[in-house]
Every structure is written in C-alpha cells, then in structure tokens.
Amino acid sequence: MALLLAGLIGSISLNVAGSENFSSWGRVIYSRETPYQYLRVTEDATGERHLLLNQGLGSQSSFHPGRILTGKVYDYFSLLPYLFQKQKTVKVLLLGVAGGTVLRQLNYFFPESAELTAVEIDEQAVAAAKRFFGLDGVKAKIFIADGRRYLKQTDATYDIILVDVYVNDLEIPWHMTTSEFWRETARHLDPGGIVAFNVVGSNSPGGLPAVIGNTLATVFSTVQSAALSDSPVGNYLFLACDCEALEAPMAVDAVPSLLRPHWALLQARVSRSRFNPAVTVLTDDRAPVELLTARTFLGAAN
Image 1 (cartoon, rainbow, N blue to C red):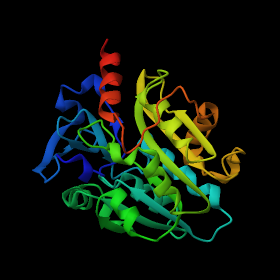
Image 2: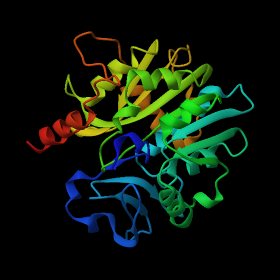
Image 3: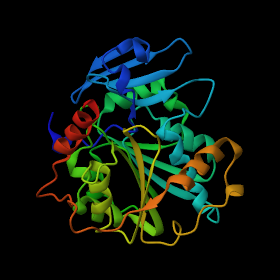
C-alpha cells in the first residue's frame, strides 16, 4: 500500500482486548479486497455494524439502525457545530469517510444548517457505507481523492475541518500529520474556523498524541486536546484554531441533552497543548508516525 496515496478511512475505535478474535465484532456480513485494503462489515447480536480493515484491530465506523450515537469517539465531532450557532450555515469538511458515521451524525443533528463535504480515497468504502451504514440517506458532497491532495487542489474554505484518517488498522497516514499539512489545512479555514483531529495513542511524554499536539502548535495559536477514555491507549480529540472560540467553554444550554454527557467529559478533560522545543515536530522530511504507533501498542502490551 502506497502511503502517499493513503489519506483515507476515519474514526477508528479501539477494541484491542478482542483484536485477535474477530467474533468480538460480530459475524462478517460483507468482505472485499479494495485497491487499498481488505474491507469487512460485521454485525453483532444487537444489530450493530462495524467497518473493519485488514486485521480488524479497530472499528473504523459503527452503525445501529435504532440509534444515532455510538458511545465512541465519533460522537464528539457533533459538538463542534454548536460553536457556530450564530451562523445560518456551518461549512464542514471531513477528511476520511469510512462507513460514514460522522456524516450521518452531523446530518442528524444539523439537517438544515450543516453544509457537509467529505473526502475518501477508497471508493469501495463509500459503497459499503451506502449499503450497510445508512450513508445513502445523508446529504453530503463526497469526493473520491486523497485528503491532502484534495486540499491542495481546491480553493474552498470551511468553518470546521475534521481530520479522521487511518490505514493499516491503527496508523494515521504520515503525510496528513506534518506541519506542512496543517499549514495547508489552515489555508482552508474561514476566519474563526476550527480543525479537529482524532488520534489513537498513549499519554507518554514522547507518544504520538504529544507529538501531534506539538506539531499543531507550530501552526495554530490555540491547540487543545482531551483523552476520551481512561485506557492506557485510547482516542484523543485535538482541536486547533487561530480564534477565540476555544478559549471559553461552550454553554451547556447550547447542546442537546443527547450530547450533554459528551460535552461534560470534554470540558472536564480538555487541556492546552503548547509548543515544546524538546518534543518532536512532524515534517514532510521526517514523520515517523508508524514507529510512534508501534511504540504505543508495544508499550501497552508490556
């Protein structure tokens, strides 16, 4: 798999304890080799479906026909448009569609106000999302392309850019982690716009989340992060901008009751990332994301 063409598939949620037992995700109802990966859709006894790639160490998307929230990292992205309530329309770009969980949730909570654009490199993932994950009923423009190349070729700007891209189960494509990539991303933000980034890692000083936060801090004046679980390895949500929107906490009254537990956890755990010259900065010349990811899971295993 060519890493330079791998700006894809989003919203990984860990199930490391059951990663060697594919039945932990349910029975396989669909599988296919794509030009980029081995793709599977599973369904468990409750009717919940998961999109798995390759070895299936993590779920890339979740879907249940009877509920909109998943109890996973995807749900937190739906908080962000509430920061733009004064606007009639909020323009959102999602890099990494996978099974379309994030798009479906945004369309549910903001059916009229969210103008959704998404980019996914694997056309077969989008086809599976429409067939098995309810994406066919979502109002969104979806482009089949590498995420970074899309940004390079478009002049469009957005209020929110969500970056949620994974390859090889647990790795972020390195070319979508570097300071050069974040400068390109910043170029596509409207004034007051926000970037959100989902990172799987540990809280070790030189771990991937620390490195990502440090890299973001070379580009954006405000960078915040929150660990979304108490596990040694888990999802971290990063928010970055050159704005004041992140400086004051969002009013709880602005958030629907369904999302208030997510709002409360985010408020309780958010911390600011500041540039530290002693911590690695990822660049196009050097971005050892695979090594940092491997260290994360080898450390968790030990």
